Length: 567
Image 1 (tube, rainbow, N blue to C red):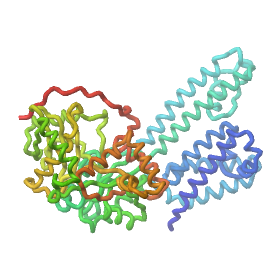
Image 2: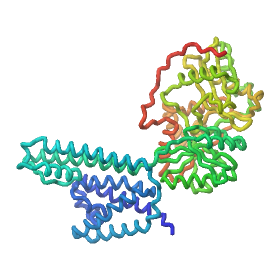
Image 3: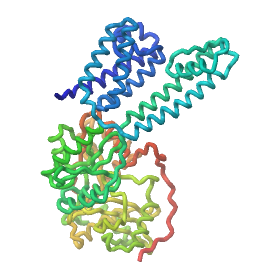
C-alpha cells in the first residue's frame, strides 16, 4: 500500500521542529511565548541540552527536511536516530506528551519505510565519513589548544583526559569538567568549541544528504543508437542533434524506439528538447526518465521542448509547462531580400559586401583538417568568456569526423577569416544554428551577411528550413511594446530589458526578427511551481551562465588574431 504522504509530512514536520529549535535558541523571549510553550511538546526540542545545542540540532533538522521530502533513505536513517533520543529525553524530563509524539512519529516512519527509497550517491558516503574524521581530528586538536591556551585561567590542574573530555563534550555544546576562573575565557572556549562542532556536523550532513552527481557521458553505443533514431525521425525537432553532446546522458524506452537526453545539475535531472525517436514511444521513454529521477530523488525537468512534446510530458506525467520563448525558423523557399520589411538587412548586407567581405558555405566534410583546425582556433579566440556556454542548443564541439554533415559558413576579408557560423543537421533537409562567432574588430553586419548567404546557398545543399537563435520571452517583448499593452505586461518587458544588460534577451529577439522567421514556441516542463527557482538555477548552470565551483566567468580582452588564411 502506497503512503506517498509520509515523506512530505515527515519533511514538513522536521522543518517545523528545526525552525522552532532555531527560534528558541536565537530568541531569548521565545521560550516564554505561547509558541514556545507549544513547542515544548514537539519532538526535537527536548533533545537540546543547551540553547546553543538547540541551534545546531535545528539547523540539522532543517537540512534533513528537504531530503525527507525527496524520499532519501539516509535522511530517514538520520531522523530515526534523533526521534528515539527525543522519546528517551521526553521521559527523562517528565514530558510524556513530547515522548508520545516522538514515539508516534517513529512508528509512522517505520511503517512508511518503503517510501524512503531514493538511492544515495555511494561516493558521498565516503566523503561524509572522511569529512567527519578529518575535521573531527582537527576539532579535537584545535579544541585541546583552545582549552589549554590560558593555563592561568584554569581552575585547579585538570588532567589531559579531563581536557579531552571537555573538548569532546564542548563540540556537542555541553559543558565539560574543566572550569575557568575568568567568565570571559569560559564563554570564549565554550563558543569556540561549539562553532567547531557545528561546522563539522553541518558539513558532514550536507555531504551525506546532497544529491548524486553522476558524470554525464554519452557512450559510443548510446551515440550510435541516437544517430540511428535521428536518421529515422530527426526532422521532428530542430534541437534533436544537440542530444549528441558528449556531456549528456541518455535513457531509452524499453523498445529502444525513443530516448531522452539529460544531465543532472544541482539535483535536477534536466532534459533538453523533445524526446528523440518515434512519438508513439515517447511516453515509455518519459516514464523511464521519471523512474530514474525517483530512484535518485532528482527533480525532473525539461527545458526547450516543443509544443507537441510539452503536451505529451504534461499529459502523461501530470507536470506543468511554461512558455519560455520562441525559436526563429526561416523557410528557405519564402526568404527574400526584396521588400520594405527587409530593407535594413538588405542595406547592411550590401554595405558589408562593398567593404570587401566574401563568404563561403561548405559541409564540414568538405573542409581539410587544417581548415577545420584554423576555424576552431579562431572561434575559441573570439569567444567572449572563459567558459564555453551552451547546453540545450549547442553541440560543444567542431570538426569531429562524426559530424561531417554539419554546415559551416565563413566570412573573409583580404584572405583573413573574420567570422564563422556553424549549423548542425535538422533531419535530411534542415539545419539548426549551433555557433555564431566573429572577430570583434571587424565591421558590424558580418553575422547578417553570413545568415543571408547561408539561406541563399541552402537550395543547392537540399536545405529547406533553417533554425536560428532562440529568443527568450519573445512574446513578452513583442506584445509589451505594442499600443494598448497593460501595465503588468509593460513592467515585465521593462524587467527583461534591464536583464538584457547581462543576458542577450532583447538583442537576440531583435536580431532574429530581422529575417522574418516563423516563431516556434518552446517550453520548460516542471513538476511543481516551488521547483521552478531550483530548475532555473540548474538550467543557468547547465548553460554555463552560472559556474559554481569553477573560476568565475569574466570578460576577456581578446587580442586581434594574426591573419588566418584558408586554402
